[in-house]
Image 1 (cartoon, one colour):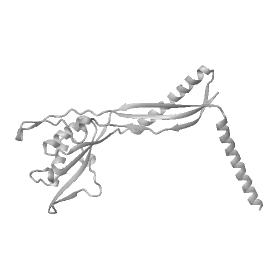
Image 2: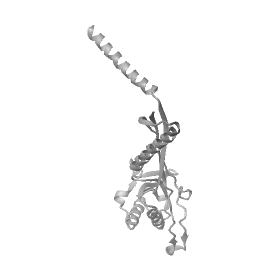
Image 3: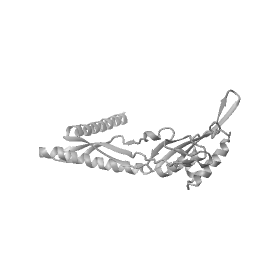
Image 4: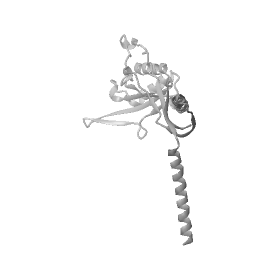
Length: 237
């Protein structure tokens, strides 16, 4: 019985302490401000989706042969195909499609990662030259996103502090320590130019037959916008 009373008394004491701390936080004067910061970075991770299929080949070239041709061509651009070329369907490398219940067409999807727009342009031209035209930009990213995000958070906190000082100075008051900080969602906005949606535009073929010439398109990716917003409560003196 005594043990129960002691336990109950300890619970009430802890509850009162927590309630008192919460009440003190609410009762003390404070100022709440929001700070934000953003930056633009050029993507250095560009993901290209490549689809090869028997149905895309007029001469019924097998997917395996097209794959070998693709890898050989990409290596001429100094691309590490073992590292940067992967199949997008990890469960099954090949997909089979049945047409008219007789003909079976096989297709395979890939994702190729390159580091800049110039290399991406060369990839599109090289693949087009060997008859692989089903290509598109899957997404763009930046390898140092986490560090850039933290830099934006730091700048957002600094901006919040400056805003709090600007608001209190005309009142002959000042701010104290921060008693509450909320890190709101960090936003990454990345968009691909309209000309790059779906199949790549700008691959102009000049001439006919074996002498055809494919003009290298000039591709420019919009910069990735990374922004951060924080909410801070400062003690008001």
